[in-house]
Length: 461
Image 1 (cartoon, one colour):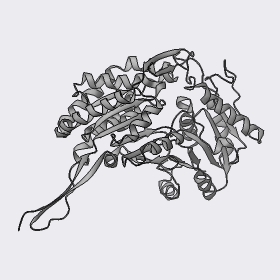
Image 2: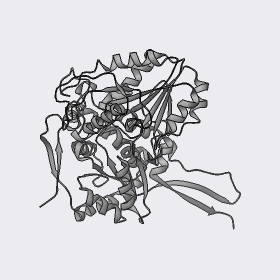
Image 3: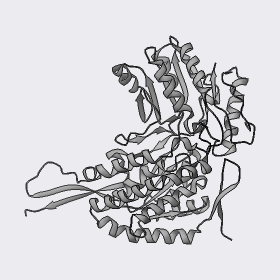
Image 4: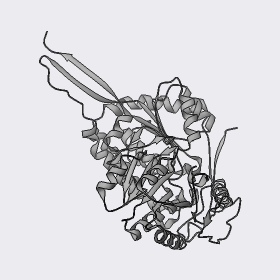
């Protein structure tokens, strides 16, 4: 009997969808078809590949009215936010637009009697293992540039959002993409690991937990495939004494609680200069208290349930531990079903926190944030760097020169000033420490999806 992937909706706990998983032989057949199709796909011009990719993005956009409630049922994000189509189009179209320039050969200085250049050639078969928290945005970061670079793509989506994989497959089918160039598969963990260990995949891009990243590296050991890993973060913010507090409060609250805090680059800890600390905390708590937790299909809800009850229980545990160690909870919002074993949980703001508490050290990935008072830039930077993660960090000040100087000292992949929780497709998306390795988006992202091939042609004998 086939292994089944069952999607349990956090809205009401029922099975929303289930699909049979492929076994290893079936998965290998998909890879073989992809490898065969990739040769003709890579032979197309970049402009020809762009036509297919633009058509697929248009097809996805046309499905958005159906996709938005699907996202709510699958992982709990309220329908009021309209899904992910805006970001999908921005990132996808940008990577298509820059492909011609990003993939053009590198030509060194002329040398008489020789033609010398370096091509960016496709890797072959790229596997994308996508997460549930942003099921379209995270996947498109690799799918579109991988295809534009001439690779075939196999998508294995998280069970929690397995319908997103089917939407991508349908979009490429509508676009008329040659068969085998893009495939959506449903796989169990053991089959996924066996497929990676087989040596038939040329590159895998995984977004998920640190434990999941380690499993990917272990499975791929000895195959010499390239690997891209984005494994989460504990992203900090530092509010300087000259910050526009209204702007900082509004944007940091959104950065902490949007998507119920289930954002890789969401704000999880905030350091505020003592000169503005009290005013910032008052404003932040007031704004947080205005969130409405409820059924994500209700337009009034600004926070839905977390994707799974166990994720909400982790937040409850972090809050309880912090309170035992002396933290103060400021919101204490009472909502229906906010209890152990339920994915519905209210947002919380903690003060009197320190780095002996897990809420300030370990990834929360939920609607809770700790705020600490600091006396100087040096103290803030030391605390921001006191983490095993390094995805993004944000600085809140009108002084860009000061921000740039501080940014040089922060151990992270991206530094923001006066904004947070956003991916600019013109800038590379990367991380340090346990956040992982590799890069996506921007011209540099194409380097992870191609390999350099040198041509040294002697024309004069």
